[in-house]
Length: 310
Image (cartoon, rainbow, N blue to C red; front, side, top):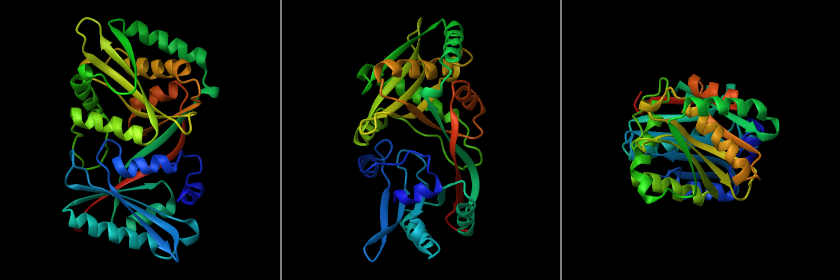
C-alpha cells in the first residue's frame, strides 16, 4: 500500500515489509491490532487496521484505513470502515478513534462516518546535515549547567533488570503530554509492557538507543529519550518517548536528554542521518525544544473520535 503514501504524504517514512510484519505481530509494545487487506481481482487495493488496546483504554477501538489512489472513489474505504465497525462492536468497544492525514478529502471522509476532529499530531524531522551544531552545543552546555545535579546514562538494547521498575515510573510521565479533546485514559505501564516494547521494536528491525538522566544524590531516574535505529535503513532514527518526571522539571532535562541523544548517536550510530518524531500540535514545550535543535515539519495527521452509537 505504499502507493497511497506516495500520493498523500510522500515525505513520511513508511513501513518496509520487515517493519510492517513486526507491527502486525507485536504492535508498538506487545499489544498488536489486526489488519485486513481488500483486493479487486487479486490486486491489493485497501488496508484496514483495528487496534483494541488491552493494557488500558479497553473501551476504545482505533482505526486506520488506506486505499490505493487508482481505486479511490469506489466506496472501498467506506466498506473497510464498516467492516472495522463490526469488529469493534464484536469486541465491545464503545468509543472509536480514527487517524487520517490532514488532507481535505480525508477530513470529509472522517466526518461522513460521524467522526469529529479531536487532536492534531505533527511529524517533524531533524536532518543532521542541516543542524547548526554550534548552536546545539551552546544549548547543551546551558542544559548541563542547569542540570548539574543530574548525570546522563546511555544504553543500547534492552533495559537492565535492575532499572526496569524505575523506568516504568519514569515512562508513565508521558501521560502529562497533552491529548487535547480526545476522550482517552492515561497509559498504564508495567515491566511486562516495557519488555513488550523492546520485543516489538526488535521485530520491526530497530535497535534501541536510550539516554537517561539520573539524579546524582538519590539515583532517581528523572528523564529519558529513546530512539530506534532501523537495521535495513540505518540512516533512519525513529524517536520514541521523551519525558521528564514531574518532580524533576525545571532543570532543562528535556533539552539535556534530547541533545544528549543526537550527540551520542553521531558516535554510537554514525550511519544515522535523520531522526523523526511525533508530537501533539498543542505540546508547545516539546515543540519548542525540537525547534531549537533543528526539527522541521514533515506532515500533519488528525485524530478523530466518535461514540460507537451515534
